[in-house]
Length: 182
Image 1: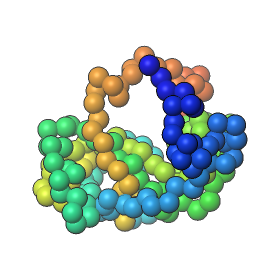
Image 2: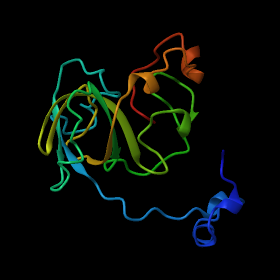
Image 3: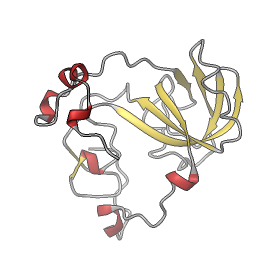
């Protein structure tokens, strides 16, 4: 059973009424990092483009804020986690970008460019160990000092879709020039 607009109480509807105008969405205040990345990658040119693509293995740490140790409880045993983070080093955004494996401009929502309207990133990384407020990770693409907004377990039954189509990427024959996001 799905809820319709009449099922939402009046106060909530008044506070969040966007059915007709997506330009009236409220600003999201109150986002607070749950931790920070400690990484050997100190500049964006040395950072892998995607998690798990580095030429050499480089471990990193997610250091959680005080009071977050219970949030990480029961993560041990998950091989991978999703890390949602703030792209704090990104400067501005572009509606169209040229992805590293392509030569055409693509809409930013059809890419993994860091130059986004809201500088949010999401990476699936290997979780090696949990030690209190420290999570040891591998196969990551994080710059040192990146704020972590949230962590979720990777659940293969729900997060893996190997038969899914990948849009314009499916049509690439040649990996294309080796360049950064333009």
